[in-house]
Length: 130
Ligand code: HEM
Image 1 (cartoon, rainbow, N blue to C red):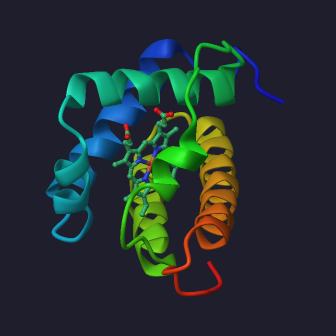
Image 2: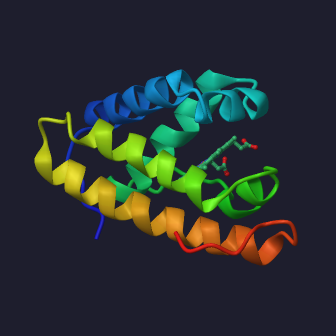
C-alpha cells in the first residue's frame, strides 16, 4: 500500500530527476525519449506526480500511461529491461533502502503491464517475455 511514511516528496523528486538524467545519457534510451518528449520539465513533473501517487498515495497523477506507451513505435522487451536496469542502478544509490525496494517492485510491475498492453495493442510488437 502507498504510504506517506515511506519517503518525502524531495526524495521522490531526487529519484525521478536522477533516473531521467541516466535515461537521457543512455545511448539507446536517450534518443528515444528525446524524440518523443518536447517539454522535459513537464515530463519530469508528471513523473514526480506518478511516483508520488504510487509510493506515497498522494493521488496527484492524472495520466494515461497505457495509450501513451502504445503510441511509441519500436518498443521491445529489451528496451523495457534496459529501462528497469537503469532504474535499479538509480535506486541502488538511494540512502532510503525501503524506498528503493518499493520503487523497484512497482517499476517491475508497471513495466510488465505496460509491455503486455503494448503487445496486445500493436500488431508490429514482437511477442517476448519481459
Ligand atoms: C522502454 C521503456 C520506456 C520508454 C521508451 C518510455 C517512454 C516514455 C515516453 C516517451 C513518455 C512520454 C509520452 C507522452 O507524453 O506522450 C512516457 C511517459 C510515461 N512513462 Fe514511460 N517509457 C518506458 C517505460 C516506462 C515504465 C517501465 C514506466 C513505469 C514506471 C513508465 C512510466 C511512464 C509514465 C507514468 C508516463 C506518463 C504518462 C502520461 O502522461 O499519461 N514508462 N514514457
